[in-house]
Length: 322
Image (cartoon, rainbow, N blue to C red; front, side, top):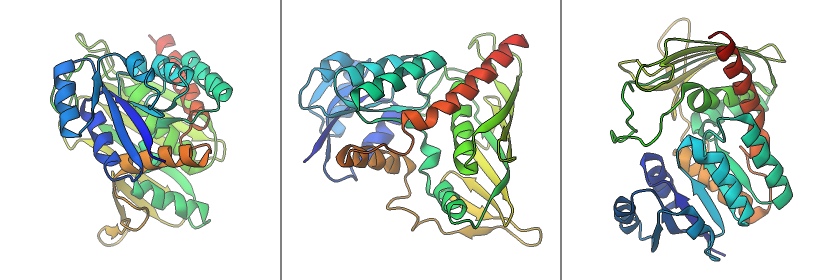
């Protein structure tokens, strides 16, 4: 059976999903939704997608659509995820699930009621570099003592990854910190017991903090330090240092090296960890496999909701600090 999918959000990340799905057998994107009809048609033509609309409800009304991938602005995520579930569709929503915890909890309640697959795009769980470390942990060969993470961008104007104007404003806490908060608990294999956050000045035009520092501690004693910035003038991206009891690794997206107190870094071959080196493709493969197999996916709403509880706790902390 071919799984027929709709994709909402034909921007930079939506295109990454379309590129990944091209490599997955038995999946066809039959509907593309985005706010600019002309640009959406251009993307649809490139990927041979027949149905194009600016209205998610129109796609949800299509009986042939089995599943939806949401790559829309953060503020729409929870409401659109609920709309998909209510329409009887499986759904994968890009990170973050929500920027208000109550909305995420409502999504989980609805997922339990409908029984549909509901998954969140916590891509770090799927990147081969982080999968390699996770398998070491699962085998009892490595335990995290500390993670040191840097998430750095140069984004002083409201532009997306393609250098195009955004219709919404990104957020260091609810979007970018969510990746690391979830990954830390996932890799440590232990819930987060303590979380502290401080932030820099609020940008006069964007209305968000451009710099943030976060400290986390898991119940098993592992700790994490996360630095985030929209002011960093290169290099850009997120870099993870895993300090463990048997080794130290640095993950740079899908590249992994092992460091040594004497001598240079040693590259770790992660090309055989999974069927692809593309984390987005692997994430999509998990989504469609869970649908076929009638099971809970890795990075399900239920699995990642604790991350958003921690984010809300830190947001309240930042608000109380003024």
